Length: 131
Image (cartoon, rainbow, N blue to C red):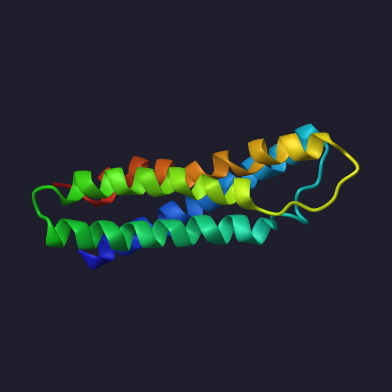
């Protein structure tokens, strides 16, 4: 079972990190604004990877401790944590910029990437974890 959770964590982490990186690259290209000074590409990938590792460990723990309701309880908790993590974007201190659109577009850049780990992890979980 540990092997399945490890594979789930590594593959979903890599896929969500890669997806977030692609989204970030495309968004920066389309808006013609470089956000890498605010959110470095490496931190995008690493945060997705760590998020999926923690999700796999958390799911394994919930299913073991609460066999009947662990899966659904974890699902709700993962979704709640994903939404709460957005608050960090709104509380972040942004650098001074002459381009006013930067302040509006940064939220469209950062917020969607908070959902890549939960979407990818839940999408590929049935491949590795079956009831």
